[in-house]
Length: 290
Image 1 (cartoon, rainbow, N blue to C red):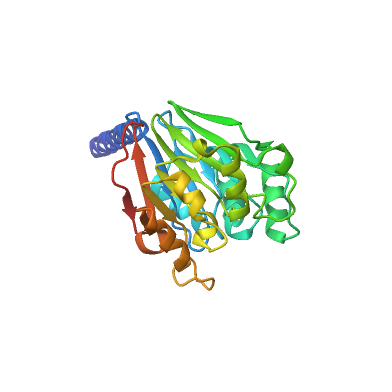
Image 2 (cartoon, helix red, strand yellow):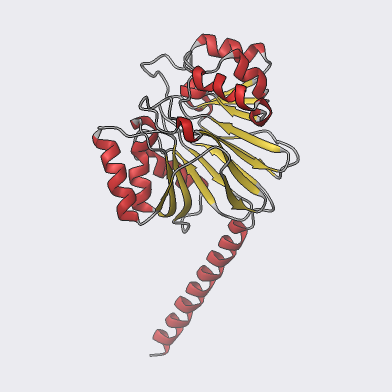
């Protein structure tokens, strides 16, 4: 009996130390020290960007072509965090939305932001079903809408406006938005083509100025016009592409245009997941997670 009590005390103390360790781990992870994290996830030939605000609210923009987004999210978020406040699907192409089906099944999502653009593909129908099952409120993005993420971090919708929301071409319908904290900003363009770039420049070139740009359509030559890149004037461009992809992305012409403006080029096929952390005053060097 004595030995049983002795072992019980040992197990109890072990469990207590373990629980205390978990609590301190959670406290450490939840203290973001006023920083906003923007992570360009390495999901292969597709897009997926996670924004984690200083207040701990998260926004996921696109989910890549498959469930690999779940593994990438686990590298950024603590294991116990099963909530993503906002999910935004820029447009209905598979390389942007397929992974969102798994995200909606594995995380509690409060808001689903998506345009009126539709697709007849099975994966788009699966996304609609997953969104409905999740109970997430569906929001239609419009130019001028600002999603407050807390701690001073915002996500500003630049495109579409009301006149352009019903585009049938999925790339023409792609959402363009800007994550902002203080003086620092990240311009995220989905698969937006040059026609939309010109349209945005004509409306308000000043709003496109950014520190980090995700060029449209994985660096395709259908996006990334000299006019648009010159107006955005980023320090970094992050190209979300799959290694050895069959499309030849990014195109050399796009790389040449970025180099022409002195932009530092980062690529998920070369650096892996690319993470920026900023307090809104300066932009430190990115962190790579191969």
